Image (cartoon, rainbow, N blue to C red; front, side, top):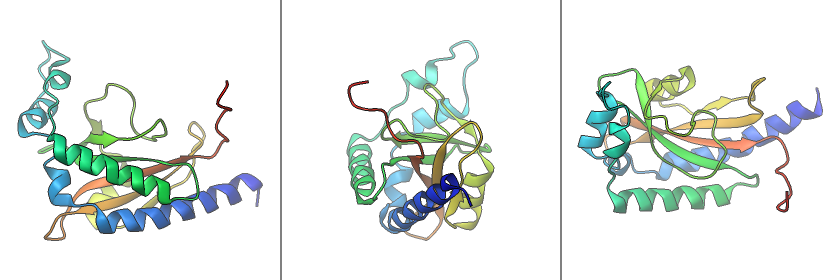
Length: 175
């Protein structure tokens, strides 16, 4: 076993520990209401003549957004490794997800400016089974990721929390 895989396994273990906490405390009823209905409509039904319209109409419930963002920041601090968190919600009527909110630079799925993303197989598994899924590093991304379900008060999975940590040491602050 190489040092890289041992490191990845330990990081995934730590992410999984925090993901179990996140799955237990994130409120799916609130997460479901972060992105306003009108904003979700434009994400689900983009206008080809106005490609940035969904970004212009990306309205959120500020209280729920900030409350959830702060909760994610607290969860990130619980870890013994540097990590960032994001919350993804399904786009109604499509096999796609959209980002409700995120913290920090480390994300496996998010790239700047995306309004929706075809649901990755790992997220699909979380949404369908409600289990926590570990995603090991890939050749192009040296990141460890764990995905956990976000449940509403009825126990239905309404979103996915992504916890991602870099496996490379961060650069010095002065670089």
